[in-house]
Amino acid sequence: MFHLRTLVLRSTDVSDDGLYEIGLGCKKLEQVFLENCKRIGAQGVVDLIANCTQIYALKLAGCSQLRD
Image (cartoon, rainbow, N blue to C red; front, side, top):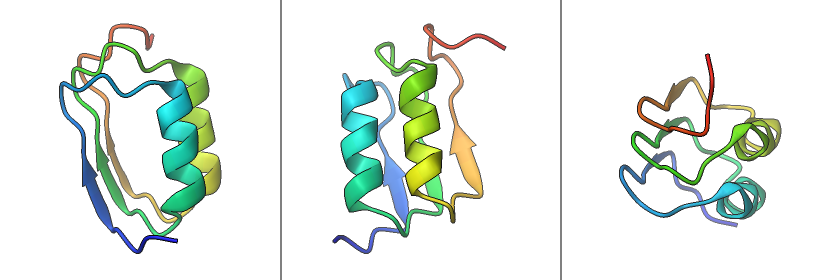
């Protein structure tokens, strides 16, 4: 398991499946920056925060598949 605390994936092709895998492998994440990631949907975010319970900063601006 990785001990990353901060992950920056702005403007990348990360998907819901990718967020699920990140959540499984990086449970100590505290800050995640995903601005302008066009392939991220609600399920990926749910999976990430369900597995990474220490996240206190999550930036999702510009993720066009997400709704307010």
